[in-house]
Length: 227
Image (tube, rainbow, N blue to C red; front, side):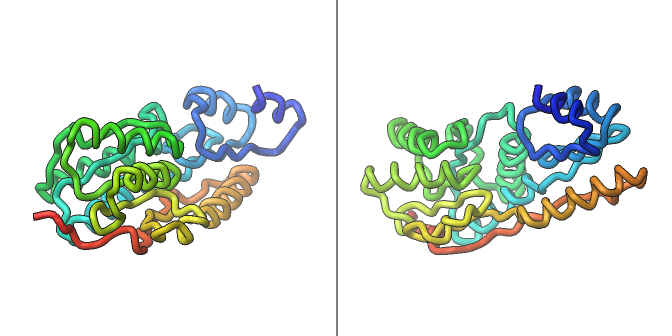
């Protein structure tokens, strides 16, 4: 286990960036060495977690599409054993219900956070003749695959289908069309993680932290063209 290898090298603390390490593994490590973990909410002695507001990010994406007149919004989820994927799906579902939009479970496809998964998800929606005017992908990589699947099906973004990604990867501003995406500030998460680690090492309590989401609107979303 790499965490225990780091411990043997006598590091002063460990910052864990998301991933699938079990909560109990992190708690066990924190009993021996300060641990800061990002991308989940977890509490234990010697451990501090910094979470990104995934649910609010998904809700912002839904609200944006609702304001553009979209009512049937498909959602391509990441693997639901991943905390980020679960929170993003929950935010999408909650906001659909609040806005009284279509909550048809067939609009949700679980995928794998990869470009190929986004492509397969859209192909599945089209093959099953699911009606939708917009898609939210739970990360930008799946949005790239979704865009390719739509192109192969002769559907234009955003004229026929609006598309939103998540994470706002650097090259999302240079896709065709430039991708609307939910941004999480990697810089802010990094600075907060470092400050929290110094506090833990100095036996202080870091202030609680939830990194805010921000929807970056580009040209992959437009008013709904379906009646």
